Image (cartoon, rainbow, N blue to C red; front, top):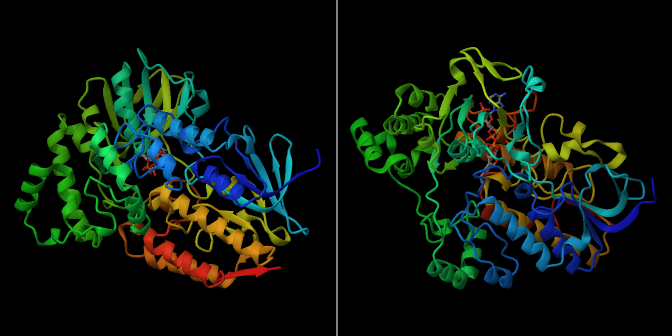
Length: 540
Ligand code: N01
């Protein structure tokens, strides 16, 4: 192995987090190298190229705010952009700011060790080695695809795809019959598009989701002009809002939002029936207690199922699509374009695995406890080892050889989702314990990147060499994250979401994101910085 190359900072990952981190650090005059496993920039949007992939945050808000010039020169075509457009945006940013010259592609980091020399040594699968004072993980929250361990999977003779690792050349489904496992956000987006192209699609659904229509549409020139003129105020509102999204022009509200006041528990069955007949799934949003009590939530679930029964032609398929036994709002909200309509097509079959699960995969299809199904190609839409997967896939060792996987054996421990006790000068952008996946990722990414860049500036100004979260501050923060999540639908005992690690067998059941609100979280982070980085130990 050659001598390690030395930088001030090594950033892992060239998605939106890594790209902006590089831009900020270079402006501080630091030497920076990004190591990226993919062939190009874009992270999540580089890998997730499955048909139908698109963002569910309005494009004008799911974009960088750090450069007013960039805001003015880039024009989105749809309210919620599709994956190719978002990837084109990432490429535009990389070109415009000359980022690629400091990114090493096709390079997967295998280990990061903190040494006695108080530097990180980072090794890669290409045999390269780097040394740096700071190591910044911009590895994404949903970047390690999860392929479930199903008996016989290796025997399937046809092509096999995963939505999170889609072939770059695309897939032509014409004349092909497919099986797809999984009905989370990825499956819900892919199913209607694949159904339009394929000869036949068999959907293997373990848990039906509560999904709401996206109402996506092309952007009008007038609206774009208005947003571009108002960007400064929109960004400010995003930063102060609960989720980093104000839904400008669509009435989502942001920090000026008036929450609903109606109580579903005060309504009669007839009133609920009438509301859903008139307004569809959207009727559920008008009640405040749906998110507060499981009994109220169940009334909303009944409304949901009632409407589903009205829009699906075949009663058995309708019954199969009906979510039961867990509350609305426990999983990551899913929004869709023509999802349920796909199940009214003749070439789509729903296999409700609650009626009998998957036994095994064979050379030609899937055997279930109900019956056997045959198809030419298999798609896994089975999600990710979320939030901790990418970090734990690397061999990260902090002070005295402490491994991150040992330290996190019972679940992730962080201070603010930014740092881990025992791992000096290691930062995690949108790490567990921060709003991250419970917010507009772009707004959260920018907030973390700015905070880290300011922290390094502070350290250099005060000639401080190392920063590390204290054990006490970390313990207090974890308690706060837990207390904030307690009692919400997100942590209900009947909820099995990836937020809780429940999608990965053996993963500790811990609610990982912070749900105290992005605006409030930002204030807490800023206040901690103002107090000389309270809760961090800083050493010369
Ligand atoms: O993954 P998921 P995803 N047998 O984990 C099923 C973001 N995202 O890729 O619910 C049978 O949600 C599993 O069933 P169950 C967004 O944050 C955003 O869809 O565990 N089924 C579930 O149905 C999202 O939340 C967009 O019972 C099995 C599915 O696979 C996150 O990414 C678009 C199984 C996995 O759903 C992850 O979404 C796409 C098995 N052994 C993704 N194992 C936007 O719109 C798993 N499943 C922005």
